[in-house]
Length: 249
Image (cartoon, rainbow, N blue to C red):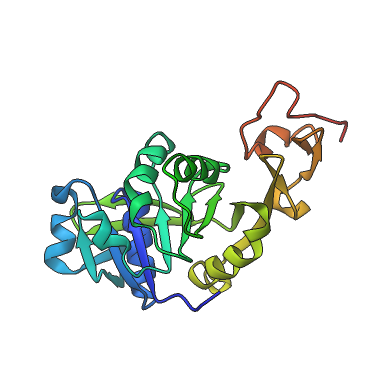
């Protein structure tokens, strides 16, 4: 997988602002897309997003945003990585918006819901997109963050463990190598690999679910962990009534 230089961030909410600010401060060429030009007017005027600490005080960190646009073709053109930190209910809509403009070899990562890469795959199949792109998702956002005003974002915490799934599952190592460039160990991140087996997210690293030992059972993801922590380990929505199985601690 090539070295990442340009990242497109699709969505200008708290997650999108934080992604753009963080990656811009690390030297990446960042394109920030919003369907509503008014939401990104302040960033476009200043050319950057300022990062505040958890007490809403300046940190001195500013992330340069090279391109602010409401033109989706312009946003994704030439980007090695496309990040999509939006609520899941808008996932399919964004996939349909982006699909015609995807380029060979691009990595598309939905940030915030395990299994969302299946939604992207469905859309690309329906729209007959045959270019090879890498589809992935993470179980949660890389940050706890709050957008503050027109060009500021408050960083509240970084997610230590990002559980990465891809479709098809064989792409997981390739995409992990890309994400590890963006979400680094220096910032406390650990990219945990998962795979999609028979269409269901399956942990390939037992530590990924904290106390859980992930495995497949008749095509479903089974989560085994101590009784006091099993609810905390529900990273993925079950696909059937029997998808989650609980065993004594």
